[in-house]
Image 1 (tube, rainbow, N blue to C red):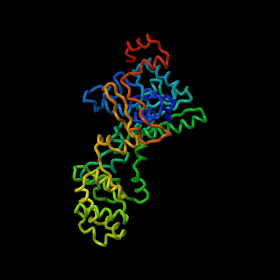
Image 2 (image 1 turned 90 degrees about the vertical axis):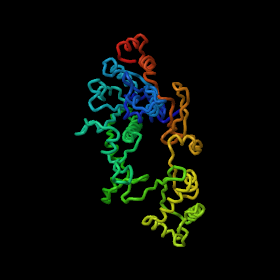
Image 3 (image 1 turned 30 degrees about the horizontal axis):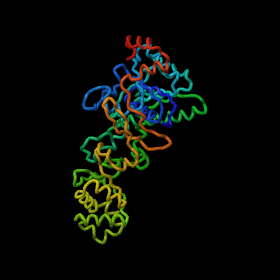
Length: 412
């Protein structure tokens, strides 16, 4: 299967912060060689684990972020391991690393030490970049979302409730996406110059640029955005839009406007359920009146809440969509496997996992594109699965030398 990054070789120093960028490269067809510590990347130990069995080869988080990669285990604190990495970088197109600034210099793996490969694109992803007064500060994902501004806009409307950062390593995702953008632009540039380049990506900078409308709203209008339950942050507080259904689900009832056609269908639905109240009154036939009442009043909102409360979640979702009303049902993650829409979109990819004896369905990609072909090419590697293959095939090390390095603790 071809892909947008087909034919490229990537060396990735294993880390939870940079693995999303490596995954997107691998899912796009690149060969990604992940260099892991002897005991495995910390990403292998964060859980959850298949069947709750703690094992570096059964971590679901690692599985998702490392599809299609190869695993080489090296103790890069050892000089002989550093020599091996330099030899890999001499043949690579991209180096992806996220160590603290200054870490790789003593190892001879900083950009100046490996840039003899003039075509190498060297991408460093760090918390605050390679310079500046905060360069040595260390952050986790949640702290980045707080300092970067996202957490001010996420969570529940109730100010007494602590803000909630988005789950799923969102700060690291932002850093990885910006890194991938830089790598892709550098690849385009290399097509004409033949030269690689150094890319310095600060996760904090990426977060500060990813606050949607919060910063522009303040700069242009002097208005503060408020976090609001189940919807985008906004300068004006709105009632909750996540409404409970008759079967214990929730529907996000977004209502930007009601045309005459959609309003009439909605009211007939309310009448059918016996919850229309006075929404059948003649004054609600006027679209301008409805819009004003919805923004400033509670009658229409209360009617919608009553309707959803006596409807099943799937019924509310599909029927509202059929009427041109933008409501959505909230599903548990595992419920999405059986949604016909995803099956028709060919969204899931079965990835064989012989270590657990079954195929696991993975999302095909962050978006679908016949040209880019981003999708999992295979399962995540087992720890050190490709060490001998990479050192033998790529670097030409004989089996005896690989065995000697293993005996010395340089690799596994």
